[in-house]
Length: 378
Image 1 (cartoon, rainbow, N blue to C red):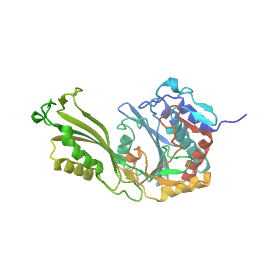
Image 2: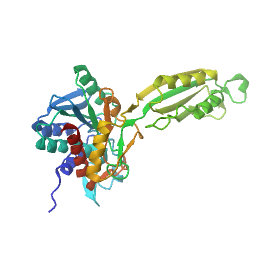
Image 3: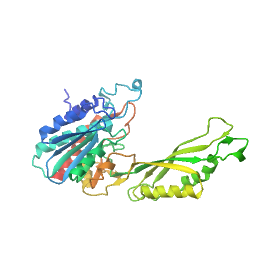
Image 4: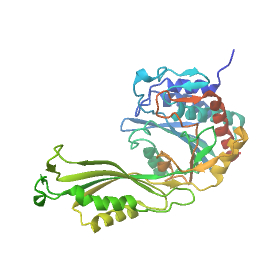
């Protein structure tokens, strides 16, 4: 009879808890039950209906923190799932369930890795921490950022942080994220004068007035990127104008757009350049900005090298550093921690129907986290 590994068992236990964002559904309570016997001081920090966990073992530096989220995205149509999303199911060498890849396997692997490391090295140097939230897949305003603010206020210094996001592309260990682009959205309203389409001289069409400026914004080269980042990207996501009638010149046009920007640009510089283009075309406009996250970058150094060595030792894979993809809670942690990287299982199925992870990757993931602790805290 095959004995289920502890990491696999814990992963299945967490998947079975239907923690659709921002609910935690007892995931963190279970983690506390496992961490407290290891000597972790556990603190639950609640904010706006969100449950957060800060746990720390030790008081000395360096402090290595493992970060992640217990919340998952909604399932989508249940009838499209081959097996129920909150009933962890193994078939064909894969474990299926919502959160299998993003990111309950990572959390389970981190906790079991800590358990093994502490058992083998109870007098290790430094400290180990866990920062877990149930508000990563949602607005992310009551989650990791709240804990980071609390840690900063009390003067707790983080030295290294590993975020368990699913970063691998094809096989476990092929990609580490050492940064993420920032995200900034804008809602541009260009005002004209509504009128009958047969009397354009009595109206002013804002779509026509916007068109040259829009073409310039599309063609603009915002920056060249840098060693770690591709150039900043500007994209239109929606354009709204008109009344629905074909004989009415619209009175306004609304354009939604987004920057995914790298560390070669700043929020201020990008906003100034957009306004300069719009002003140059003498548009009558309003522009509302929303900054969803600033870019962060951890250059190659102690933490990424420790993780890369752990991956090489465990899997034989030579990992690559990458800053591609969307945002993560790493953007908040980077404000109080000088070295932040993300590493987890392959991400090909995340947020999809029949989300899954290959079972063969689960214990090696745990071992990589444990080896990283060994490389930094022994």
